[in-house]
Amino acid sequence: MPYEAHEAYLESAVLSADPLELIRMLYGAALEAVGNARRCLAEGDVLGRSREITRAHAILTELTLSLNHEAGGEIARNLAELYDYMQRRLLEAHVTQRDELLAEVASLLATLLEGWRNCRPAAEPAPAVEVLPERDAICADYVAQSWTG
Image 1: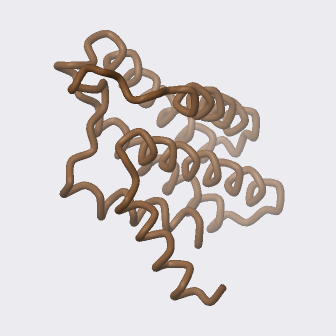
Image 2 (image 1 turned 180 degrees about the horizontal axis):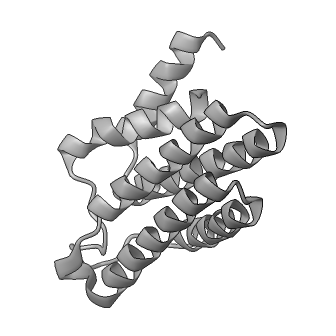
Image 3 (image 1 turned 90 degrees about the horizontal axis):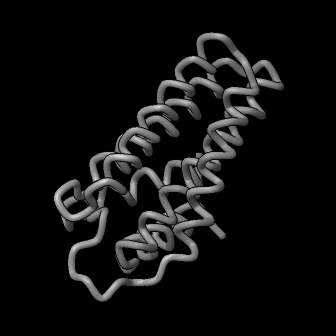
């Protein structure tokens, strides 16, 4: 598939996704970025490792900003703390060049992604996270950057 067609497909997928699917896409993109960072670390690609860690960190920031603390209560607080922890581990991994820190973040992201894959839309109108329409373009950018590198 040509690059432009792939970009158009990703943009369409993101813009047509429901909020739960957007969160899943962001987790998947963050997990992929951490996996790429691990590969770059093993290959000695400092620039690539930096780019991928930055990408994963930015996605975690986006996930943090999507939290609805009012409706999400304790769940939103716990997710915010976990996202912050993962961001700190990513930065530590970048500085110390330790794969086990990246592996830890990858494991946490994989667990979260699995949990979100099992989520179904709730009857309540206010989820613990919310993706605002103006943020769709930002989500599309993060997902597209992660998948097209």
